[in-house]
Length: 400
View 1 (cartoon, helix red, strand yellow):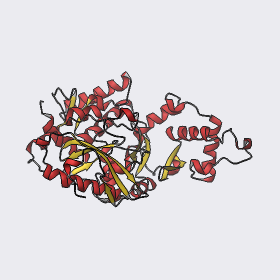
View 2: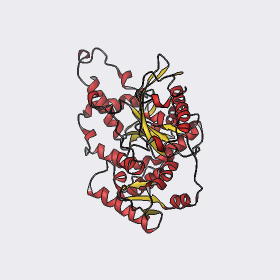
View 3: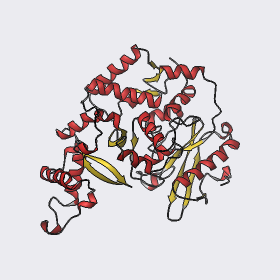
View 4: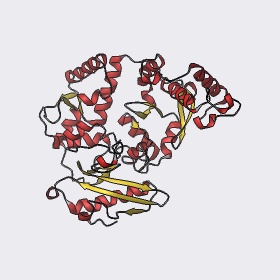
C-alpha cells in the first residue's frame, strides 16, 4: 500500500500517546497504562532536564510525578530490566525477559564478564538474610583486606550486583533517585505471575505486537533493533508473515520508509477520521520512545536527529542536550535546554526551528512553544525560563 508519510504521521503519534488528547489517564494509573501500552520506558541517568523515564511519562500522562514510577515498582506493577537499554517494563511481560536472563546466567552475553562467583554467592546470602540492600549500603568496612580490594571492593561488588540483576536473581524493589534497592526476585515477583520461558517464535510475536501497538507504523530495522543473529531474524520474519497473512498488518510502499508496515485497523480508522487541528507543542526527551529509532524518524517526519552530548563540544551542531520539538503532528526543530534546579532557573541555550517559516504557523507556534517551555520548567522544579541570548530564539519573540 502506498501512503505518503504526511498521512502516516498521525498514525505514528496517536499510539504513542502524543495525539490531540491524553489516552492513558492521569497520575500513577495513567503511567502504568502508558508503560503497558508502550512496552517499556528507557531509564537514563542524565539529568540535564528531567531523567528520561520521568520525562517520557510526563509527556503523555497529565498529573504525572516522579514518585508515581516508584509506586508502581513497589506494588509490583512494573519491573526493571533490559529492553534495548535499561528500561522499566510492565510486570505482565516479565516472562519475555527470561530468555535474556538465561543467556546471561549461561555466560552467553557481555554481562557475564568481570564477575566473581564467590562475591555473587555472598551477595545473595547477604540479601537472603539481611533483606533488601543498595550498593552504597554494603559499604567497604575496615577489617576486610584492610578495607582495600577483595570482594568488598566497589568494582567487584558492582559487577556482581549487575550480573545477579541481569540474570534475574535480584530485582529492583524500589528506587531513591538513581539509587536502586535490590531484593531477591522471589520476594519481588507477584504471586501467580506466568514464569514460563517463551520460545523464540513467541518472543518474536510479542516484540512485533508490542512495537506495532506502540508505534502504528514500523520498519523492519526497528523490529530488529539490537536483536542480532539469523535465528531472531528468521523468527521475526515468520511473525511478520503471519500478521500479513491474517491482514492485521499492511506492507507499506514508500521509498523513505523501506520495508515498513502499518497496523491495518489503525490505518483504516485513520482513513475515515476527520482531520485534526491539533497544534500543541511537546518537547520530547532525546530518549523518548517516539524518536529513539532515528532512521524511521527521518523517513517519517523528516527530522535528522542525533543526541550530541556524546559528541566533542567543537563538533556539536545544535547543542549538548537538544530536545526534539513536536508541533501538532510535525517535528519542526529542536531546543537545547538546561535545568538549574538550585537557582530554580530553566535556561534555553539555543533554539533551532528547521521547518520552513513560510510553512509554519508562527502565530500558533510562539504561544504553544512558550507554554511548553514553561510547563517543562515547572516539571523540572524551575519557576523561571531564561531565554537570555539563546541563538535562534530572537525571531520568535517569545513571551514567557
